[in-house]
Amino acid sequence: MASVPEKLKEKLTIAETRLSGSDQCQNCGTELQGPYCHYCGQPDKNFFRFFPALLREMMGDLLDLDSRLTRTLKPLLFQPGKLANDYMHGRRFRYTSPVRLYLFSSIVFFLLAGFITSFEIQRELAGNTDPVSQETTVEAQAKPEITDQPEIQETLDKEKLDPPTAAEDNAPWTITLDLDEDGNEVDAVTLPFVPQRLNDWINEELAKSESKGESIEADPTIITDKIFEMLPMTVFILLPVFALLLKFFYIFSNRYYTEHLIFALYNHSFVFVLATAMFALESGGSLLVSQGWITKSGMVATVLDWQSLLLLIWMPLYFWFALKRFYQQGWLLTSVKFVTLGISYTVLIASVTAFVAILSFLLL
Image (tube, rainbow, N blue to C red; front, side, top):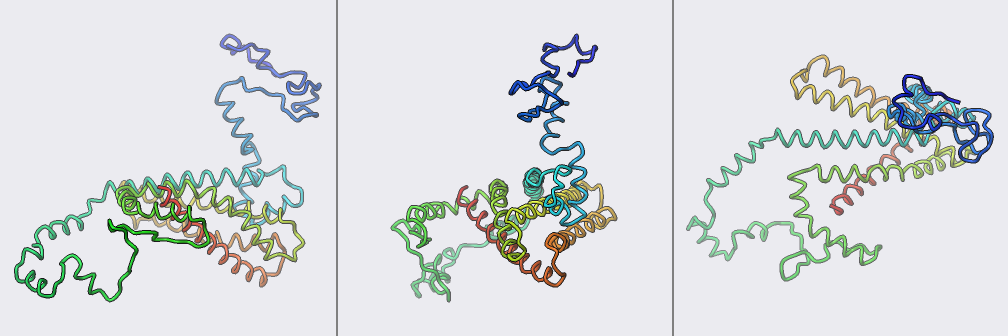
């Protein structure tokens, strides 16, 4: 049973008996034979302790920071397919679980990516004086209106043309839209495979597109924040789809769907960790250059660029080697499946990302 140091007893506001352990499980009352109850599994510990120690313990429970995370990172980054192989062969307790690893790496990536993207946009907006727009505005103010020049107006009157629509009426390509009496579009989009209520909602949101576009132009972080808000769940939903693709490509491997899912979890975790490192390198280099601490063509910036490039090259190579190691097929067949699977998943991700961007715009 744990005891409290003598120096701390005077400062404690909680009875020492509440800070110490117990001979019996506080959950089920079973006599304890070690730090864990052998009947229900509850540990013989409490949360009445100093906050830094409690915080470290909570993080340790979340990620197994003490030793598992350090044992997990090396094979995750440099030994493609090893973690999934070890997991399938029963060597699981030594590593951080694939679900925890995926959740933590994805959360860190999306938080960092969202923060850096918003920061970069705000920095560019703050430093952009837009001299071209100012020059264009001055020129526009200096030019006279067409209707202020009698000769041109007389010619337009003879041709019975209206200055604002003359160019549009003579354009070789035109788009005709259904308009109401106020000139607003009516049912610009009609999808036959969805309920009419959804079509009505889409058209209502599209009617607000002009004002939304102006808001985004003034502050692009409005749309980027919305996208990064939706992407984590979207990518998480894509995980079982990717595992399903693996099941299809390795249909004769006699593997359960769960095995493909474990492989997908570890590989997505690797991508998130590497992408986080790349984001950190890119944003760090950009920040150092903007502050004038290093030059864009200097040695430090060059080293950072090369590191980002190497990480980018390592990402597909890692997946290629992981397929070879986990599924144990020849290099030729693995290469064919690697290319086909890569193209299929890239198209899927691009399509889903585009859908998320459109949906984010509609939900603004």
